[in-house]
Length: 196
Image (cartoon, rainbow, N blue to C red; front, top):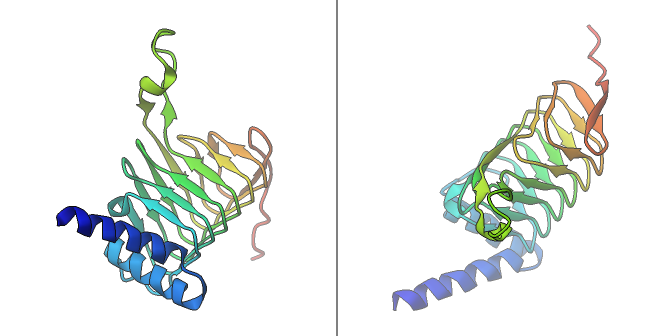
């Protein structure tokens, strides 16, 4: 009987995560509240979102998640601040690591963040998929805009008030108040400071 209830729970989650229209939005918000034990206000979750590891997903109020986003956190942790918006197709994978996203962050479509990497140099006789993982951490500061199709690699740190250009690959630290573009991402200029 317990197995049947678990199966029903899985199907119910799948239905809620893919239901269309306003009813689907309402169902997804309730599902997120229930699964994460978070009663954050003003949450909007688009259809086709996938979550593995509900217990390790933490978020504050005003979260907006676009269509088809993926949260992989069965073996890691994802922490999301307030007033955060994810466009469609975002992939957040914290397995074997941690992802921390600050407040007032906007992330463009098809961006990928992977907190850990594969081990690959133990022995040529051991297939890479059997060599395990190297744990890592990704930190995104407050007031950051990340363009579309950006890849953020393990141990990257984007400090506060930064802009990351579309298609960039971020692997190190982007200092506060910077605009960074390219592969690998390099700082091209500072953001204009507010006039006093």
